[in-house]
Structure formats: C-alpha cells, structure tokens
Length: 292
Image (cartoon, rainbow, N blue to C red):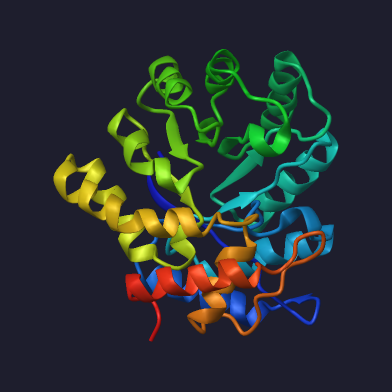
C-alpha cells in the first residue's frame, strides 16, 4: 500500500532544457528530508510540455538516482490511451514502483469511457496504477462509482483525489475499502482527508517542506491527531501561497528563492509569477523559516 507524503517533484529547466544535475540534487534533498516517495512527470513536473524523450529521461533519472531508497511513482497519463500505454510500459521497464495516471483531459469521456481507458492500460501493463482525478484540469469528474469499479482491478491500487470535495473523498473511502490508497491531490486537504481514512498526499508543498509534510502524514497514520493538526496549521500558509498562480510557477519561484534550483524557468504557456505574488511568496517563506 502507498501511504505517506509523496512529492510531486518539479522538472527543473535551464536554458530550455531539462536540468538533469539539479533534478538529481532535488531528489537527494527529498530523500534526506524523509519524503515517502518521488512522483516525476506529474502536473507539477510539467509533463504536458515534455517531449516523449524528455518524459522518459526524467523517469529514468529519477529511478536511477532514487536507487530503490523510496518508491518512485511515475506520471504516465495521457488523453490518448495508446500514449498512456506507451508511457506506462516505459515506466515499467525502467523500474518504477507504480504509475500515476491522470484522467483523460480535453476529450471529456463518459464514465464508461474513463473506466475503459484505465482498464485497458491496467490490462496491458502489469504495474500498480494510481488513478488521478482532477476535474479542474480535465473537465470531467471521475465519479465514486467509477472509481469503485476500477478499484476491483487488481493492479489499480489507489487514487490521487483532487476534486476538492470531502463528500466525494468519503464516498471513495467507503466504497473502495482500507486496502485502496486514497491520497490527497490538494495539499490543504491532506489532514482532513486522512482523518476520514485517506492514506496521505501527492504533494506540491513537499518540494519545499518535505520533512514537515511527511511528518504530518506519519502522525496522522499513527493516530496522533493533535500533533498532526498542529503541523497542518503550520503548513497551511505554504499550501495556499503555492497556488496563488498556476502550479508549478509558484513552487519553482520558491525553490529558486531557497537556492535549490538555479532557474525558476517554466515552459510556455506557463509564465513566471507576478511581482505582487512574488513578494507575498517571499514573505510566507521568510515567516516559515525556509530562507537562509
């Protein structure tokens, strides 16, 4: 079972290219700070603007650098089922522990279409699959009934749930049972999600505060709710400021301020954050104690 805080790691760029050395350094920072796993090539990793070659290389670097110290959950989703199978096969051959698969975006499939998409990939590649429901980006919500159907497929083992609905989260937990990993796709909902039976988070905030996020999840999993709640409220300002503009522009700016990456470069059509939000971000990082 996948549980705890998994970092949705950024893909650092330098002069338009993937900055492989900085990616390796970020992975080492994550492992040293106690993150529970690495998720390359998700939304935060700007997978939508990576070429197939870059996508596969980022997954390979991550698996190589992690060297089995923590699980690697590779992002392999697409709105083209054949492409999703290709990326998932590559992740399997490269040695990923699992894959994260976003719902097909833009196509607006029916619930039956969603079911058939994920079932097809699961049948083609024998690797643990974590579904990713984020209707704000895909235009379609994966309903709890569909998730329950998919949870019966042996290698579909969990979901990153980012609908923002606690009702939906509770419905999924109730329908799918304790051996299905419901992970938060919204940092600010991690604590409440875990209080109703969720297992953790695939986190943007963990890029800059992995120790606190993984510790909060550990405390929640151990039933130490008062201590977990305290960390939840400590983390909350980071959860909010990192989404002041479209992810991952704010978290890349934060990592640059922290001297973790040499460039906060994002790929078009994303743009660097505004000067107004940059000042707000700087203030939050200072108050949190993340700037040397």
